Amino acid sequence: MRQLTVSLWILTVTVILGLPAVGQPPADPFPAVHADPAVPLLQLPGRFQARRTNSRIQVEPGKPFPIFEADGAGCIRHCWFVFGQREIADLQIVIETDGTNSPQVRIPFRSFFGTLLGFDDYHIDSAGLVNFPNFTVGNDPLLSPTMQPGWNCYLPIPFAKGCRMWLEATTPTQGASMIDWQHYQDGVEPPPFRLHAQRNIALPANQAEPFRILETRGIGFLAGYVMGYRQQNHDDMVFHNSGTRMLVDGATDPHRLDGMNVEDDFGFAWGFNQYQTRWVGCPYRVNRSRNDQDGVFYRFFGPDPIPYRESLVFTSLARGDDYESVAFYYQIPE
Image (cartoon, rainbow, N blue to C red; front, side, top):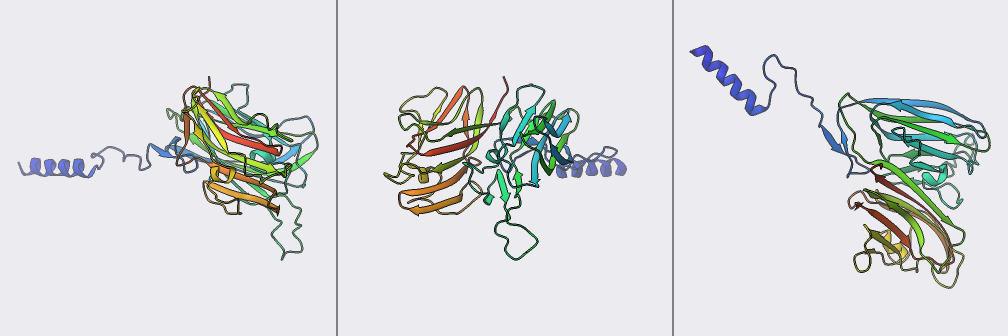
């Protein structure tokens, strides 16, 4: 009787404390899923093996150079690149997941990492993109200020069947890369959304029609965007264009998400200053006069994503200025 009482006591304590039963392996201490820190709406699996893929980049003109190839399920969580030459304007980054033979990303490399309109490299410190240029280093005679930045992307790239990433260029390009990724265990499924990037540019924009930032159909959500402005119309401040507009799932007036002016859409007031935070920031700004300013600004929608179940049309009212935008969004493949 005493032995039975002790066994029942042990069983009771085990159940109350959530301990594994005698003879059973301990439960996995890691959570089954966790919110991605850069894109919290994505619930990524917690059961994975951490992996890294390194590459010595040797891009030949007209030949794709593979950066990352993996089969099965997983998620890229961090990409780092560096290049041996200053000029990489012709370099493109291409990302394809799950063997679709239709890349979800194919845009100029510098644009993907938030450096727009051919402006000089600048520091970016955001949830999705982090760039470390070398032009601020002035105490090292051996480090040239023309050397390439360290380019970092923290936007997750989930895949269920496999993933390929490669670079293309029209001139020889040398460099290096590190891809940190998570290899999911058998039976672990990633979320259904896949990273997409859409780039648009106008030199200059047609002020008779809105400038398109993103237009897509399907099921997904907007994760963030980067927008560059080069002022060509000097009648007023570059910011005074009445801001952006989002039409979700075919919505029309009055069911729309409208902005105010450019600086207001990015969380600033009375123009721009070079401040950066996790979700909004201005990494580049040139102020020649009140009506002659250039700048690049980012907005990542981590705390307040924009979901859509049919379509999303995201535009900005335009003036006769130069515009370039890159929108990052996650969508379920058709």
